[in-house]
Image (cartoon, rainbow, N blue to C red):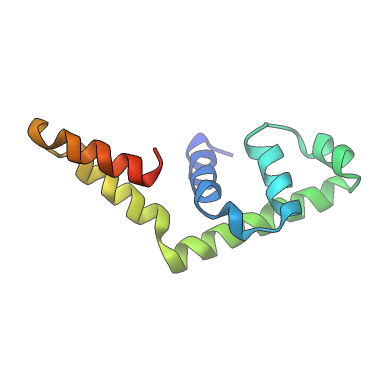
Length: 103
């Protein structure tokens, strides 16, 4: 797993986690945000390591499908690029947009 991959899936998770089941959200969060191993998650959840691995793969596919259809991450990144290009006199506008986006 690369750091870029981790960042990508964490960004997708941030955007779409509410669309996942509680169990899938918990397992993905434990693995990617808490950095727990498959074995540790399996022990906590009372399932097999393979079950945890399958769940994580399934969540990744779901997150990718959500982004493919909705493009929230892509649009959010485009807005941040525009904010970064604002002149000093327009920085207040950029700050307000960031507040709206929840950043």
